[in-house]
Each structure stands twice: as structure tokens, then as C-alpha cells.
Image (cartoon, rainbow over all chains, first blue to last red; front, side, top):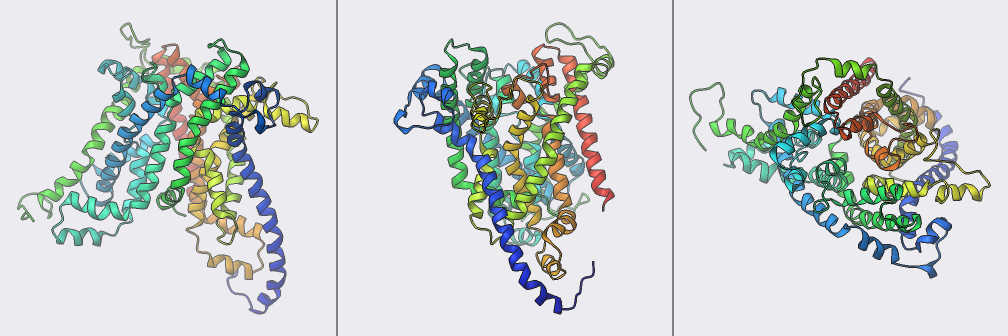
Length: 300
Length: 297
């Protein structure tokens, strides 16, 4: 492609190009609006339907009549499934596992990004390889390990495995690598200790990336499902997602003994209850989250 | 500051040489205990016929031989491959178009769209999987309800082996496309916009600019997205586990779900061998994509 053209052309092109720009604008909004509808409608439908009488959900799935508004799906669901203890267990895991991830991953990533030490490349290579491992690969041996430790159906089994994942290290290393070395050296000259440099210089600079990691971590832990199903099958320890999935099995297995409509109603009520906290957190923090991902992603 | 010690190859004080080891220590301990150790354990298990209780017997390569000659193993890979074909091309086209549109600072309601597109990504998978069961129910679902409105016949979305895969693919597309949009957006933001000004003087149309400039410029990000999603599709487990249980007639038994089924039958040796085969396949595919990327450099 030739990079220089005679300027005369630009006047010629300027006119039709505004006309061209106007039409795609409508087309692109149409595209985006349809996509928005596709993305939001299942969630909106589920939340609205949860407030309908159970029989109505399956008889008239497409309508919503505000005069029939009811909370019976919610009251039935709270009576039938231990969703409150599910929330509590998820909150406990979230606090401990989240803190471990948010402290250990950036600290290790800082060592990988800003120090030279023997075996560094080998260690980081191992981290990269585990990035490619399906989480499900480790499930059998981890389960056996937990049995040996006597940790089946314990909080530590829910919290420790997967608390420092390879992706967090990889991502934070990218983010910390962009912090200028001069700043670290200046802090050193000022008498700052090595951990002090991390805590008082690096952490404030990478705050957007950390915020992104925080949102992603909260989301992953909140939504985690495979490992909790395997390791914490007891009712006492079931996390929110485990409680939800048991309810889903009732719809096919019909274990509660209730009719299809009732279970569907309770299912939608439970889904709505599980959806809302994360959606609220996300909408409040969405700027940090998106900017955090933009700060940490691969470029070009 | 501590005076620099005389011995050792490093010119830095001891404190600074020790620091990185202390910083990676918590990570290394957790990583070794719950990452590396179980992985080595898997390797060992894959050569045994252990079912969890009796003493394990060394069976050599027979688990691998059994899997590689098992039609069910290949069928599970085939199911995942079909899902890959149903998902990845559509997802890339939609995500790329969306990202290009959202990258335009003059676009109205840009912030709103960004939130709307990421909502599915934040939605708990188990919750949306259940909503999917209800929405796509053949008799009572809202989707068939919509089809009735336009006079179309019922579709057995989740109960026919023809439609179960597309319905799962739709769930996966719904759930992850917004995240891919954000990843592609990060690639687009690294492009210097002045090249487009040069191109518009050239009279290049939007479609051509997209094809011959934007796509080559963000091909690394595109490849990153493809590798990420390939891993995700071949590991897909929770979606079929909740929505279809692998049925009907095994049509949605993905590679990830097939692997899980060994665990439920306590066939741990075969399960371990299956894990490692799946890792090998996924790694080969990722390397293939990386090669593809290198070839064009």
C-alpha cells in the first residue's frame, strides 16, 4: 500500500465519507442493541419470572402480569434448600481464599518480574505449563490427597487448592513488569526495605491491575463449582453453587417430590438470589474490572 | 543499609538476594502441595488400575491403550471438536465486530454496552445453566413459546441429539463472548489510530481496513483469544454436567465430562490416563495455533 497520496483526493473523499459514516452508525447500533437484548434477556426473564406464580411460569413463559406478583417461589425455595448456609459458606471461602490469592500472587509475581535468581526461569516455565492444565486433571489426585490429609468436607479443602493460580501470577507479572526500575532503585536509596518497596511503591502503582484481579478472583471463587461439588458434598459445607446445582438435579430427578412447576419456580428464585449480589458488585466496580483487564492483557 | 558481603557472585546485599525467595515462598508452598504434587501423582496413577480401595497394580501403558482404542473416548473428543466448530468462528466474528464498534470513542451509550456485554460473564454458570434448562424446555420453555408466536414448530432443544450441542454452544457463546470482546478491545487500544487516517485518505473502505489492517495488527491478541477459548471448550465440563448430563445418547458428553465420568465410577487409573491424554491434545493444539501465528510473522 502506498503511504503518500496527492492531497487533492482528500477533498474528494471527505464528502461521501460523511454520508458513508452515517449509515453504518445506524447499522452498528442495531447490531449492538440486538446483542444487548440477547445478552440481557435471559437474566431479566429469569429474575422477572421468579416473581410469577409457579404455574404461570410454565403456562405463559412470555408474559408478565404485575397483578400476579408473588414471593411464593422465594419462600418455598428458602424452606426447601439451605441457600442461606450456602451463602455463608461461599462468603467464608471468598474471604480466606481471596485474601491468599490477592496477597501471594502479586508478591510472587513481583519477585518474578523484578529480581534475578537461580531457577527463576524454570519456576516461571512450570507456572506457564500449569496454565494449560485443565483444572479437572488435578481433581482425582487432589481428592486422594485430601482423603490422606483427612480434609474431605473441610473448609481448608475448599480454600487452599487453587488459591494461588498460575493465571494470577502470569497476569500480575505482566502488570508489574511495566513499573519502572528507577522508582524501585530510588526507594532503595531512600532506605526502603525490599518488602517496603513492594508494599509502598509497587502496590500503589499497580492498583488498577490489582482491582481487576480482585474482581476476577471474587467472581471465580463465587462461581466455582467443580471442586466444591467434589470435595464438599455435605450439606453443612455446600457452597452457594453446590446448593444451586443440587436443586437443578431435582428438576430432572424430581427428588423433592414436588411438581415440575414448583421446582422451576424455586429454581428461578434461587438463580435470581445467586445472580444479584455479583451483578451489583460488578456494576459498582465495572470500571476497575474492565480497566484492570485492559491493563493486564497481552498487547498487539 | 547492610554492607555488601564479600563472598558470593552477587554485588547486592544479602537481604536483597534473599528477598525474591521469601516473596515466592508462600506461592511455592501452595503450588507444590496442590499443583505439582497432584500432577506427579496423576502421572503415577495413570499406569495403575487403582479403584481407590485395594492396592494399586502396575499395568504399564494399558490404560492409555484402552482409551486410544475406545470409541467412547474418541466420541467425547469428537463432541468437543463439534462444539469448538459451533462456537469459535461465530464468537470471533461477533466479538471482533463488537470490539471494533466499542473502540470508537464517539459511539453513544458505549459505557452501557460495555456493562451489558459483560453481564453474562459475571453470571454464575450454575444459575444460567439452570435458566437455560427452563428457557429451552421443549414443552414449557420461553424459546419454543417465541417460536409458536411466529408459527414455527417446537424444537426439542435439550432432548434431541441433533439440537443438544447447538443449545450448549449457545450457552457457552452467551457466557463468554463479552469477555473475548474485552480482550480484543485491549488489543485494539494498542493500535495507533493515525494509521486509519492514512487509510481513509487512501479511500479504503471500512471492511477493507478491518480485514487488511486491524486483523493483522491484533493477530497476537486474536490468537491469545483462540488459544484461551480452545482450552475452555475442550475442558468444558460444568455446562453439560448441569444442563444435559451428557445426553441425549451421549451427544453432549464432552472430553471434560467423559473424564469426570471415570471419577464417578472410581476408575481412577483410567481417569488419570484420560487427563494426561487430554492435556497432551490441548497442548498440541495450542502449539499448533502458536505455530500458525509464528508462520505469519
